[in-house]
Length: 389
Figure (cartoon, rainbow, N blue to C red):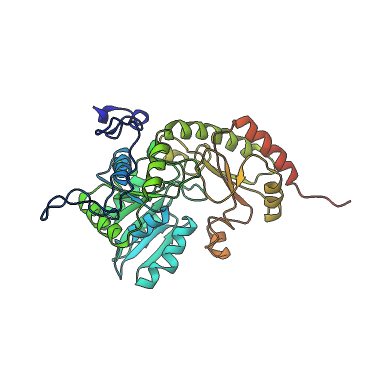
């Protein structure tokens, strides 16, 4: 019956609605690191918490169901999930990857995977022709972020999947910005979905976590073997916090998305803003494609001011958002990609991708949209160049 529920209801009414043993309506936190085995020859479902834990498993089954996959995995961080997934590759393999990918992913690919003989090419994945031209005989993976971080570029997931299947490649999608509430890549043919659950899924800036979901059982077994080998698993307290955050995901993201739309429209009309990047704007390059594969534009937008100096004046004046690394929380978070999320990317590489020194990224929280707009208006006025008389 639960399979017939809407996504909103599934967040609350699933196999972990209550504990079968006690009736508790909150998933029990099982701190045990090891488990007694009653039989000498046949062990129970759990033996050592690195390999499996009831609390972590509750989160893993929850995210697998929400994404429409067969198996979920909870990692100690988003980068732990991404890095472990990359290790499904072998020496001599080649990756095609979104050009304006998250800075931590860029660092992993360019400074770690390359040491193990795994080659890579960054491409503008909004251009399917360019993707096709860059597929090599040894290309084993096409890695997407859509919308991308921080320019909110939209990739045609179905188009990439067709290219990948024709060339025997796996497809991964970082779905952190939208979550399964707004986009379900596995249903569009993707092989593996990744999340920094630190962001919208948990939603309260109080936990570090990563999640992965596979569509295929065999791929799930391979990923599990890597997770068990490397051991970057999520602790039970953090797993419980993510489970709690999931319960309010729909209402949080719905409210934040409405405010993000209002703020994006305000910024787009403002004379001091050079450009706004947000899939909810009708003139956004990926607006149409996004509307076909997602059910909403999300709560993250980026906008560009004239210079780093203007950014600094704006940041010093704005009051409501916290100025910090990360996104996807109940409070609005303003970030400066050049020195935060994409600090690992050399300046020339950032500029090639359009990540300028005037770019700011905003994750809209649960504050009233009118308060955010008023705050941004006064901060933008302060960001104007000062004229010496």
